[in-house]
Length: 195
Ligand code: ZN
Image 1 (spheres, protein in one colour):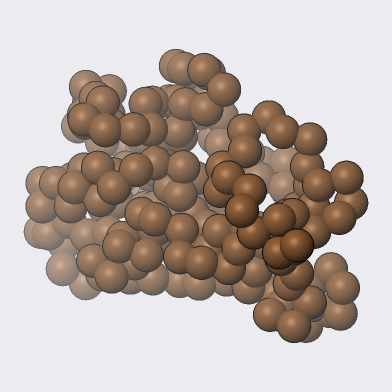
Image 2: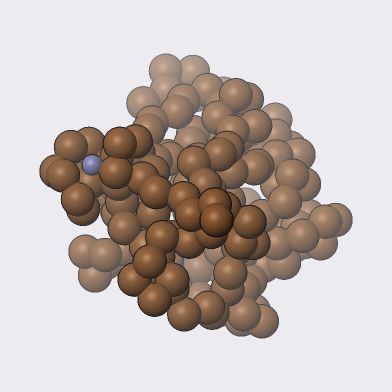
């Protein structure tokens, strides 16, 4: 997808939940692997899961990944896990802080292909840092839509539901392990409780 072979670059795969981001990332990684390129995949260490992990899609396909720290200078530890791979993929980029942007820039400057996947919006429909910054700096951005669970139109938003009801606008952005569910919804059907 890139004509210049002597430079690295950043490509971002983004969109709402259930839009096929992870499936698209795995498709790109499989193509690279078929071409004989070495691939390293990273995920944020949430819920204290560190080390070995897998990136799975809703299609049931998966790829071995390394779970790394998601905050601050510790994100640079990603470099310690690299062993000359030309392709570096990062899934769930929205769970990292802005240090991830510097790391991705460093990797691309170092001649690597950096494939980043993550949500572009919070459940409130606001930009979900650091993905918007990565989208601005990337050579390539692809934004996918899901299908609205309410009306069937293209969906760009993440509807958070708590006990089946729309979440409150003042809830924390990231709720790891909470009792909640999500639907992809369009702009019209997206609801934020504000009472
Ligand atoms: Zn809708």
